[in-house]
Length: 212
Image (tube, rainbow, N blue to C red; front, side, top):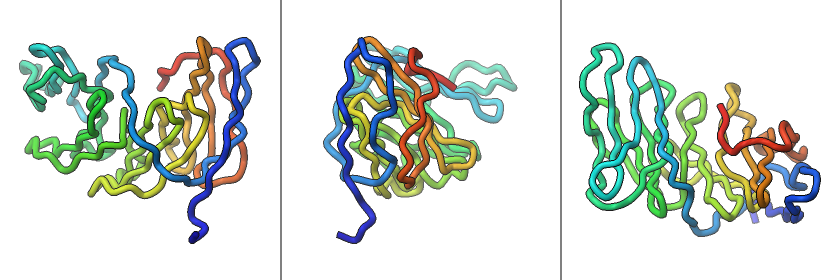
């Protein structure tokens, strides 16, 4: 190949074992197929505006509130089906919104016009890079993190970690990630460098998959 991608094998752990960093580094690999993610409702705040997911009909919709004017919530996106939307996230400059659909695609929109930019079928619960040029997300059950071009939705690279790895979040510098690994009833939080051969560092061995 061209040397840009590598595959690594993660060691299995059991809930009774002490958590340890998965013996794999954040080096690119291939992207497997998408699997469903969780159904939690979440929100994101940016520049005096709050975007959130709430029930509407048999499914969920995306709403936007101007926190300065205190106006009623504005319907931003209605899938018109019984789907669950997940993880809305603002771009760093506040111009775009990304939101994932349970067992479905990731969407990005222009915040001002509500115009759909693109969709991608291999992404759940998005996180924007600090410079706004990339989006990282996970494919639950596979331990795969996908990095996409934020302008087009095209894949840039992917990383294969432990099969329970979820919810990647960028560091302010954009060269590290924090993420969770779920193994049975135990959840651990790790820190890892993108594109580096160093193993992930365990930050918390008995934690939640949700953090900020």
